[in-house]
Image (cartoon, rainbow, N blue to C red; front, side, top):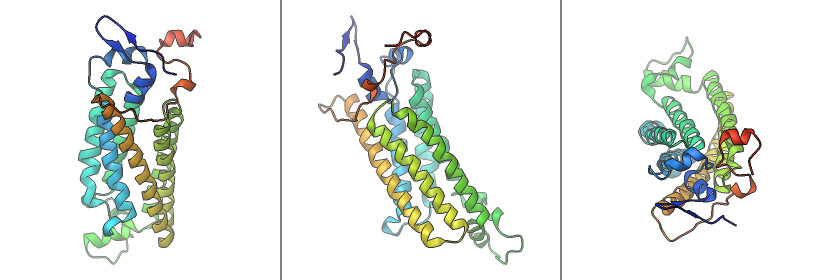
Length: 269
């Protein structure tokens, strides 16, 4: 049962549960004060995340015959990261720690992964054999992209990201079930795509394709959950008369709107 809203002379202070639903971060004293002064920047970052993940997942699944990510490199540089980095700045100002960390995490992921999709950088070409018989830049890049070394490196890269996202998943257990689903599936999806690149590194192309499509399907579910969470936040901000469930988990834990000094002294309820 949610605690009653607290009225003041000039405004209404929202409950910790509602704060976490809107900002996807525990309510703490300094963040709660900024909530009355600035617009909520969390949905902006979620918008960049959802568009990026949807685009990525659809290509990974090969919908409509789609193949290859260079055509959507703009999403990796000018959609996801731009909105996410703006959110990082605004959320830092507002003192919303977890949302800021999440947006920062995914902004650098899309930027770094996007660099792998730019043929002009020649990253894959550097992995081509020194004795290659290929004569064109495109052929050299294709040979490098198929090499064991290149694919093993990308597999390790995605493996590390899987563990990083798993760390964030642990803290989503403090917030709501939708966010738990997003981060748990993103962790699994990262490991599955890492497996796809491992299979590519040993030349097992059928298994790699299966894992790629599986990873794409997982990220499609992630994007759908993200869209749902985005809609929930925007509906609340736009004062729509709907109250969609997100599986609030904050009531399981103790209060967060306490000062750190009180927390250290054991005064948390």
